[in-house]
Image (cartoon, rainbow, N blue to C red; front, side, top):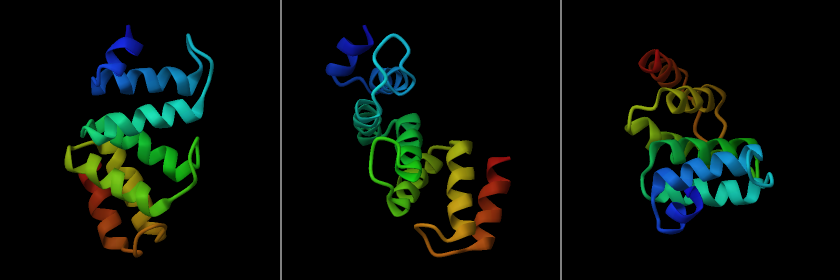
Length: 114
C-alpha cells in the first residue's frame, strides 16, 4: 500500500516507504531507493523527508556526501520545528562543515531544540 500511495505522490507514504528501503524491512534493503523517496517527500516540504534526506547527504548514505546541501535541508526542516534537524544543523554550524562556523548560532539551535 505504501508503494501505491508513494507512486501517487503522497509525501507521507514516500517517507514511510523510504524508511522500509533504508532498513530492509519487508523489502530488499536499498539506500539508493530510500534516498530517492526521501528526496521526493522533501521536495513536497515533508519535514521528515527533509530531515532524513539531509542525514543521507551528511552521512553519504546512498548519495554523495554534501554537507552544504545537508545544512540546507536541515534548515528547511528546522523552519518546521523539527528538533532533530535543529540539533543536526547546530552540529554543522559548530564544526563549520558545509556552513561558516558559527558557535553562537549552534548554541541557539541547541537551546531551541531542547
